[in-house]
Image (cartoon, rainbow, N blue to C red):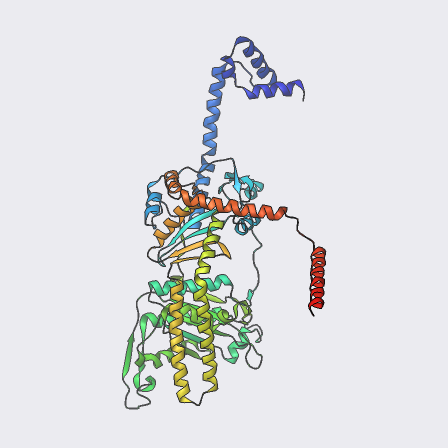
Length: 585
């Protein structure tokens, strides 16, 4: 470092205005350093202030656009999460606090703590320790991809790589705390090209089907009809690509069928009673025209395709579908024939659904997923494998507030363990009843000709089904679900879900030391209150932690014997035993 660099640094460290207020000797030295270093071109402090004001105004004018883009980016990020302003859906004590508290402004710079993906799993697997995470830049930062293309764009990077979100789903009366990981920005993946082939439903698809079935059952009366559509030889060849260039997909044919079925659903249909009514039979004299009125409202459906091998080993594509459409029994035959005519490629088999709440379960069971899991032979399908009507899709969770993660994963894991221990006796009872039901079904297959045995076994199966439903209902009676295998979420259900979530968060902050820190709300007064309320339980928890840590430390310092030493001791003890045996023989 030369003299000019040194004098420049000294001049940068202290401004001219502050230097003037110092003693004459110090002012002379430092001011000379500023001038010699080239930091100021003049000694007039007023001129310097005027220049600084002008530069500040120019900087504000230049950054107005980027600041607006930053605010828009933050707004879009919240929309993707479903963040509600002021937590308008939530009710109860915690929700009222969120509504009344003013949100603090987002930090505009600096470095904050971020949990990496490996660190996140380490936290979940270590309930008594907190992994020190890495640091990254946060706040309003320049997008590196946009910067490379000379397009300056600010984006908001959240404070933590992982955040804890309080979420609400009103239609199902559920409230949950969900840990969400936000990875660092990266390049977009390559665009998919060509045909898409799938071998089975993904876990995410099965979850969507179950949620949609529950949503339709809760808000729209539930699905009432189970429909199976098959393909004739010609259409099967086109689907499998065996007819040259004339290829079709299952999805395109289902779309055509649903378009026609929706028109009949809305407009209604007519049929001749003597020709189509199964109750009257083939009566030539009865030629009355029967009018079935259309239905107003949304047309709900879910369909899933599969292509397993038949008895001859050939692919057998077919589709299972759920509809919220039913007619009176006297119109059923005509209705089924009308749907089969619209389909036009094979048979259309319709069944009434007895339990609307379990309609999606029928669909999943039909494709073998529930029974065989990921090993189900669902066959390879080109194009869409399933689809859900837009009106039938379950609304997403709405985010009410976000918190720092802190030690919440260990708290959820503790609750999950306690709930599993509580459910174990009922789970064993459920397995025993399921085993009895399976045995009864096999016995019915063996005793097909014995009517008395068939009647007795049917009654037994019906009784077991009723007892199993009661058992499952009892397992859900507490209205809270957590699992030691999934330490990233805890869900509360029922009319008291909000109250249970409030109680859990207060207990976690007071009795387990959770920070309860949020960038959106000031909860310091509530945190202090619950810490005082649960002080004795928190002290007891800390004592237990210290006790077990002490045991682990003692175990680590113990002089454990090697395997060779253990085997030598076993041999010595065995020789003593043999000597005693010979002595008393």
